[in-house]
Image (cartoon, rainbow, N blue to C red; front, side, top):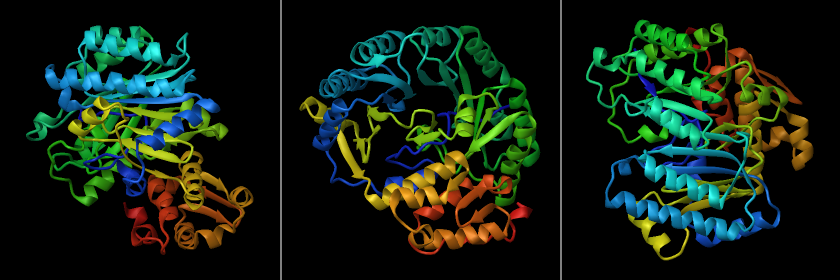
Length: 443
């Protein structure tokens, strides 16, 4: 009885040519064509001079899931990109985080891809890196779970597309296949199993959703990512549009998640991500070392991020760059011996302040205002006048604790972390949706 959707261990910031994931709209608006492949090459060489560990993200477009010439051409270009990137990195530092996302390859192609990656990059031995992969139902079974584990993956995200849904009864999935994959993951020694949970379709009701939520909790996945179907994960953004449920029903379903999941022993890390109390992300949040990158919440925010494949995003210090999302352009640039960089942006001083404030609020659910002022030489309330007015309104509504030297998101405000963070991206006064909290308790 599930409409469970593909997960990425936390709603990320991945720019997408056809739509953005949740809180990433501001990030996407900064990308422009003034950043190209030469900028990325310089960043790679700078990374080589002062080597930092790497976080790799590799994109396999779903449109290439079937065998044929487009798949072969894409893989040839992808192999060329891997060689070109590692050529400029020189003595490649260790890969602490790796995520394989998107479409699926047959065992031979996947073996060849992983062999090249391990030859060109320094993957960690003894299962000490965080190496994750997305799988979907149908199509995954015990055999495929075993092969992926043999290739070094130790985190798995299980997704079930609902694109063929034609009414209430068709949208409920038998929990047996999901249970089978969870059993396989535990048998083969995966460290984490994650599942996404969507709400807000017209065929859902608060009662039916409560039943589904209860059944999913009984399967005991390690992580659950709750999301609104109006903001689906990137891979499903181009799927058929479904009619939404009423705003009232959607709010009730969302609130059910924030009530029932903590009762079942899950902690809300932020932005709809729920984890077990002993999860490494929960422990990183408690220590103040949790970060976010373009893949979501992570313990590896200090890493240089390298995106490989169609539409993938890289980040080196203040430089953000995205590969072309158009297959023909991606193939052509790499055939000419160039990186397939399409657009990007450089983080200016003011943007760095906003980025740090947003990340710490999203990850720690609190902010040391004086530390920000000392580090950047500013007066916080003058630098963020609109955000401060929004925070004052939220403080009166009991959503945040607000002092001149400290901001803390209270339990009642944790449903609105994304809205609170968006206050700091506003140069004008805070938006109405962030200021009008009179009906908040009725939601």
